[in-house]
Each structure stands twice: as C-alpha cells, then as structure tokens.
Amino acid sequence: MTIRRLQYKTFAGFVKKGDKQWLPSTVNKENHLNKATWLTSAVEVGSFFGTVQSYDGAAMSAGIEHQIAVLPRSMKQGGLWKLLMKIEEASEPNMSPAITKMFSMFRQVGWYLDPRGILRNTSDGTEVSGTEIRNEFTPLNGKVPDSKGASALNKAHYDKALQWIEIFSDVFSDPTTYPSQIKQAKLSLLELHKDLESRVYSKYCNIKDASVAITGRNITPELDLAMCVYHSYSVNAPSRGRKVLEEVLSKNLSVTEFSKALVKALGTNTYGNWRARYIRTWSAAKNSDLYCDTLFLPGQIMPPTF
Image (tube, rainbow, N blue to C red; front, top):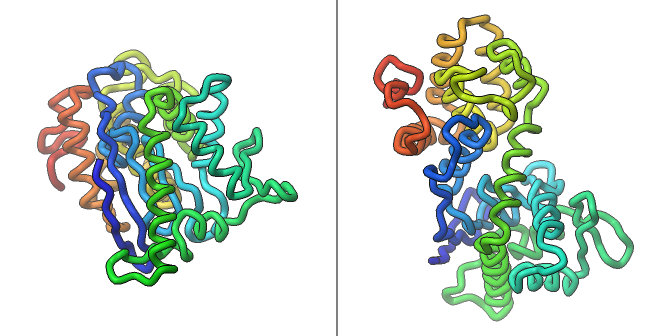
C-alpha cells in the first residue's frame, strides 16, 4: 500500500489506501441498509478496508465510511473514537498485534478510551482536545511538513505523522476489525438524521427507518436506490444532505418522482465537489449489480448525466 503526502487548503498530511476490498457480491441485494452502507464505502474509500488519511485537518480518518478523529470546524472529537471503542470491545480478550500496538501507543501519549468512546487524558480524565489530537497525529496543527530539505524538527514531525498513519492503516486493514467497521457504519447511517429520514421511510414505505427496509417488499427499487445515494452523500456534508432531503420531501411528490428529484438535487448540487461525486456514485452503484440496470438509463432515477 502506497503512502502519499497531500495538501488540502491550509492542511497537509498523508493518505494510505487499503488493498482489501469489500465486494458488492457479498452484500444482500434485498437489504436496503446493507446496500446503502456498501455504496457509502464505495464512494468514500473505494470500498477498501484500511484506507486512512490525515491531510484534511481532521487529524485522522479511518473506517469504511471515513470516521474522523476531529471535527475541523468545532475541533470536537469525531466519530473515529466510538468506532475504535467498538473495535476494542469486539477484539477482547484476544487483541490482534495491530490493535494492541495502537492502544499501547495511546498509553504512551497519555490517552485512554473510555467506555463511551471518548478519548481522555490518563493524568486527570479530562477529554483530549481536538488541538491535542491534531498536533499528535499531524504536527504541527494539521500541517505535516515535507520531508525534502526539512530541518531536524520538521523531519521529526514528518516521521511522527507517518508512524501514526501506519498504525491506523494496520488496524483498519486487520480482517478482525471488518465486522466492527461495517456494523458501526450501519449504525452511523441510521443515527445521522433519523428524525428526518424516518419521515421518508414512514411516508413512502410505512416503516420506521432503513434498518427494516427490504427491496421489493416494503421499499420500491426506485426509492431504494435514491435513499442509498442520499446516505452516501450525507456522510460527506451532513447539514447539506439534510437540507436537500428536507426540500425534496416538502414537495409532497409520489414515491417515483420523489426518488428522481432527490437524486437530481444531490447530483446537481454545487456544494463542494458534489457534481464530481455524482459520477463516482453513479459508476459505483451501476457496476455493483445491487440495483436494477434500468434505473441508470437516461430519464430514470439515476441517469448518467443531468
């Protein structure tokens, strides 16, 4: 697996891609939540286990749907710590060497994970700040220096950031962590905007949420695809995803027209790189063999272009 140093806005760090793929052929084609989780992983990390990155100000991102260590704007702890807590719980009492090494490194820094998935300081039990986390994983302050021509201090910062990216990659590439990664990704999708999403599933499927949606039984193939696309977008920018879903839902459309409108609203949105994201999402969904081929034709739910 190749490691590259990248820059994003004012930040810099590394990305290391995984080499073990979560294949769509292993996903139940009737289970809506499983398909939504797979599609999200395909768009976020190419559905590769072990892909990690530290170049975008979030200190570290890992997991099949890219849980982050630090929320760059608020500097609060992100969902990565709860995921690691679940991995730790599932691996006890026989932790793999990769997991054991990670938690040993945390102790060396002076950190521990509490049972709620919050990273705390060993000295006094206080919550570790986002600034502390960012400076440990990507010194200094999210800007890992280039190793070329670097001073001794900058070389030390580079080496520390590189060590952490290797440690996280080893953990998330470990096959013993795959079930926890998938399970936590599903839970994250269910929790993200459950109040709003429940209105969609209740209105069009007469069910409470995505966890009980079965394609062809209580959710149409059209809505199945549309909500999978929505879920894969919403993890990238939750507030924007929620806004789009609210606006489309307020139009009181039929289930087929709602499905078309939702995908179009996401795919044509000017936020960030969402238009380019649509191309990746269309390709991943169409080539997965998890959805009916006709849904990807021009004029259908998810056409190649708008």
